[in-house]
Amino acid sequence: MPQVIVNGQITDVVESNLAEFLSARQNAQSSFAVALNETFVPKAEYQNTLLKEGDRIELVSPMQGG
View 1 (cartoon, rainbow, N blue to C red):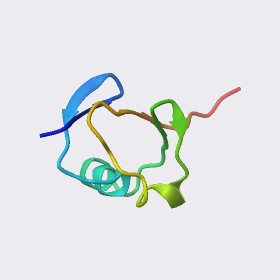
View 2: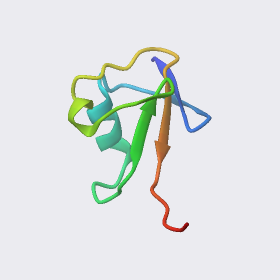
View 3: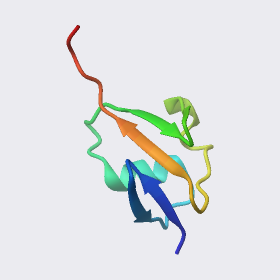
């Protein structure tokens, strides 16, 4: 089973793309930004973004303040 690193944690994946991966792990109501291997991924590209062994995924929730 391939593994990726999500926010610093090694995670097994069975999903083939980012959209499936996020759907399986996130509350649909959650708002966050995604970086794959230190590159921002627009939401419109989640379905077309294939995951591979060793990918690093960062999920960042927006914060208010200033």
